[in-house]
Image (cartoon, rainbow, N blue to C red):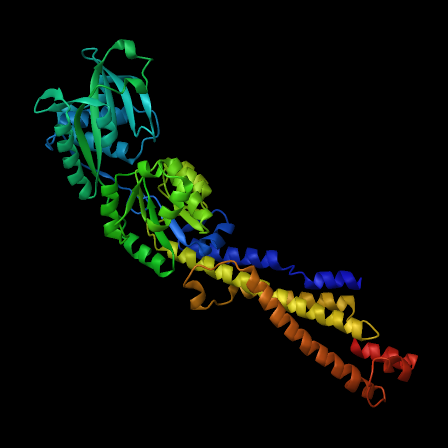
Length: 513
């Protein structure tokens, strides 16, 4: 019974309750900031996070993309480009992203004044398509005109990817071969828009036949004609710059992982205060070994033109380098990285799969709640660590004292029920720890779980308390208690049996207990 009591006494049995209370307190604090915490354990990971990787669109930006212009290759407004963009976006069967929504909305707005754009869906019928994927970065639809039965393949996607499948270009009212000189001119024009912070999407088309219906494949995306491009504006959130400053002050590095154009990314990063001197592209990453990438990820803050698998690979390597990594995203392409990250964050406007994968969901566009979450996570970590250190040191010291006294004294110094009762009273007092204050120094930098510090704390404070306990035992045994039963003092332990009668020994033990 005594041995079982010793085992119970040395165990921090209130740890699950303390951990749950600390995490629940953090969850409540974040809930007041309009944040949903789906996994309580993520709060502690939030606090220990030292790198936050984030997608750009919809997280740092307002996720309110506006179609600014629909242009031919010379940079002039062209309704023909918008018409083909609308047919592509309207008829795709996949999940319509914010670009598609913006194209459709803008076309319907202009259709009130431009009859050329009115009821396009009633004049064309979709007969086939090639869905979007993150490797091609484009998607195609095959449409048939109900007026003249002509079949046209319309492709929309990233400028570089569209140019790769084009051999001709619609220039000054006629179709001409797409040579290197014209390609360079087009890319320079696109670069100008990108440097202004605009996203650019290219539109291409080619004539097809009814024979292609039901047989359309990626192989058909060739020998196309570039007809123009669309420019979109997606400004950064008002709170982004302030939130990133707070994260830096808390010792959290911010890295951008995006599939977008590097020039657009650079423009947005300049507005929110993220260093943009070095940008690593997806095509460069694909050529690197894990060892080489492990070095580059430490020196680079912006990664552009990434595929979903490359995002996940970067997160995995950062974790392998010893970092606690968070990832914030809102799209389908962010899901693989969110699954690998230590803590995943999404926003209320995200797609369902991103919100399902996320540990934490921000219900408002204010990113300052990220800093609140980190602070709450660090308070949680500090208070849990505080309980473990205090309890382990105290329990170790108490049990060590009892065991030493059991060896020294001719009787058990504390009854099993006393040990358990003392432990219960102590644990009840520790129930206030989750609401304890935390020093500012503790939350200024990411905490690291250091088991060695627990051992040091336990040995120093546990042994120190045991020394005091043993001195108290000696004082009671050799001086105070002998006088209470009519003896002067004890000079050695055997005096207990030699100098005391059975009745006095019983009285002695009852006074000890």
